[in-house]
Length: 504
Image (cartoon, rainbow, N blue to C red; front, side, top):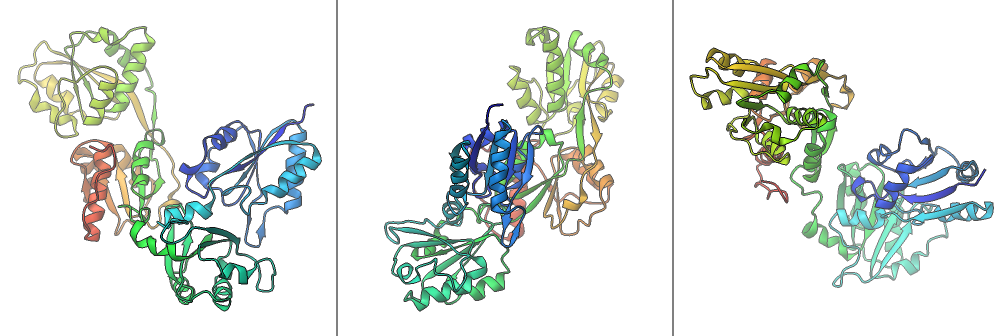
């Protein structure tokens, strides 16, 4: 059997968006992954189901596996012919013991590669608006491991105190009082600015600013959790000027997305871009119809109007159309109506411009746009099995021949209500997400804003005894996001933020 290979991979500081392309590629193709405690859950979720995972993380005094056993584990798995990824928080060679592991691999004759990661020593200050170097403040950067004890001779405090540049202490949170004392005892001014950055680059990041004389008391008052890093130097003064991450419009807010998981990615991305911590709590999933008979009849038939009520209906319709070897030319002669701008955008993506889009995101808003006499008019309504029938009933009353094409079903799914704590906003994108959310949980929503994508969804909220606090002016994911941002800005009494790049 040929010997496999070990990849010592840096997973970055916490924000999954800072994972390198090479790291993501190796994670996706690994046979065996040894993963650290500080690797974010979002990155750990990338691990394929076919890979064996062993958690070997070390945090403070808690070691899942001693270092010598980690070294041997990597060697043993590689000698079985496996592709082994050692996934480490930050960078493998910045206080990550990657050098020690590489030495052991060399001694064992195991091939390996080093994949650098973004170190929290650089990313943490950057996310706190603190450049570690700046021509006006600091022209040098020193990285120091901060978990040395008071009696340790590992740190040359006299030499460190002579530096005018930036000093970043990693893993030194517990020794903050000793660090401040040692620096001042060796000549550093007690007024030297200090920043302590907790959970750097994550949605839970918190930064406390002080001086060597005041930082211990300020950190104690703030009750900062670990992990945290310490930045000492004049560059800390720029935090109030450049603080871009913690000033995002939804920073520190926990927002629930109830949309089906396969559809939630864009809404989740928008909220996270605005600084929110997103809890995915899908209450529905999209399933195929029990029978394709009615949808196929719409695909194969000749209709005067095709009415689409959702993006899911558009997707299902065109999947069946293309599966039958047809394309949009088969729809020649039919006029197209759709509910909502997002549905209209999905149609345009298939090369079709809808003839009719009502201002409100509800099928009944189509009714006034149709003539009172519909005798001889054939209409196909493409929607979920659970949709509302008001439009269909009214068109039939006016004499139309209406065909209901069931394109998909929405099925309730069990969700973990334990995640629903300290929630600021719950978002709903359909009546079914509302009904299933209230059926799935009895969580206390006092003080929590309920956000609706449109009138039909708002009506569903009212049926459960609550008034929607936010209603999107148009039925799009972008508009729902913007409505939440504006509501939070009003609740804080602040000015409205500029729109995200690319937003309407």
